[in-house]
Image (cartoon, rainbow, N blue to C red; front, side, top):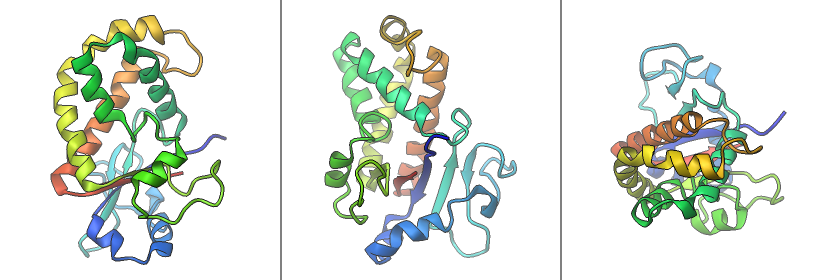
Length: 206
């Protein structure tokens, strides 16, 4: 079985108030969908969307369940590889905002050294670069920038269809179709939009 990806939307003030060595464990304690309550759109925890911890206390994090990936990490890696392949074929204005939107989410998220530099010491360093403690860290200010980038990216998505066909279609290790690629981007757009609305950050755990 491949690696999974669990994406948390996190109240950063609450996270950094927790001792560094306990932060991953605290998130992992709430990482299993079966332990969460309702999805934001009212469906049960098997549906996609935001899964919230049960109880009456104010929640400080939620897990996003991706409809398009069923929890697996590899579709995100493939989508990031697709963008790396096609970006040279995309106009400069669209390429700039796509880089801003995807950078650190699915494009370059597997670069452990870059992640360690970007997270500012929010989490302990991984003992093994091939088994990182975290797959992505996006501070609230970075999330806000990604939400702004998504507002500019979304109207331009169809412009990516030809570059995708030229650089990615039919290649192993890339999304099966352009529609699959765009569907995943739209889910990430929903993730960053909601996190930015709350002023929260994002954390991805394997």
